[in-house]
Length: 126
Image (spheres, rainbow, N blue to C red):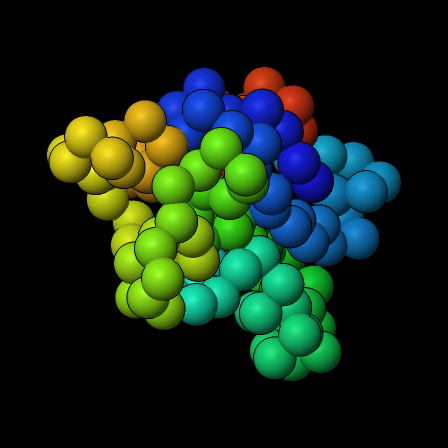
């Protein structure tokens, strides 16, 4: 799923896994598990590496998996020539330096904007 983020001022990507019970009768109180990947990852790493086991377990337990990207991305987003800073770095905090603060607001994205998006678009409050 992609959406325009006001918090990061760019398009953000995330993956969602819904157990079959959510497809037939959506329940707003279905538990949500947020998977926050780490350094140099993106929204696909968890699905590729833990996929079969994670999805089967989430299905059995009736849990929705929320798998956001690790950082803002795109041509307008400042990057760095280091693996541990910039796009894909995976720090879930808000930047305070001038060069990064327009896009790198991942704490607010994960704790505020993303839950609101899930509630508004998918009726999920976890």
